[in-house]
Length: 271
Image (cartoon, rainbow, N blue to C red; front, side, top):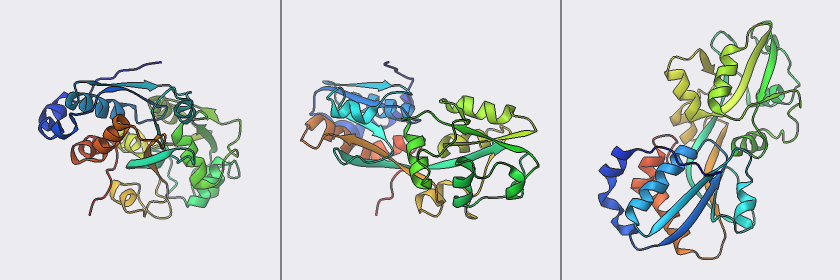
């Protein structure tokens, strides 16, 4: 399934000047993924193409795709993911936190990282066990193979432990609507890309993000590592040289590329 999304025309025109240093490569590049990075990758791809008139990047996005396996099989050249793979080279282009989303009325003050693991492995079943309301916990999970799920399970050490009774929802907007629309005696909890979570909270949606280990889920705390749930945004590709792949990775890490990435995610710190 090929999806081409609108991109930031203004940003591209503003930054067009510095792109000339990437204007020597040509050919076709397929970038695949299944997580929340789609709009960011589309914008990077269109900006890269603007600098390289003889290069074409096809962004293929599917919630159920196995991006890493597609690169290994030669069906794509770059996979966007949140975990490294020993068989492929990896380049990190950003950080993203993983936010724990609940309804605004849920007065649970905070949780520890261990309590998040206990919630999503089914050990804690009611919010009152965490100082919250007398309601049962409705777990919202994400589809298998989505990189945000892989990173979440890995960070918490709960791979394969999320109960099958959890409600599985792929799209972030549907996750938010489900959390908002779940009423007592149930109170929903979901994990979501922090960039998406902060966006809906600032937009006035009736949800909140729980602090973890007394650290607020914010851009500075994710960037410096104080917030304990974060994942890298990675580009994975075969280890043998490929000038077009190398140029795209270098562009994503360049100041213009990092400005685009920073519109949604947390760009890398540069000394």
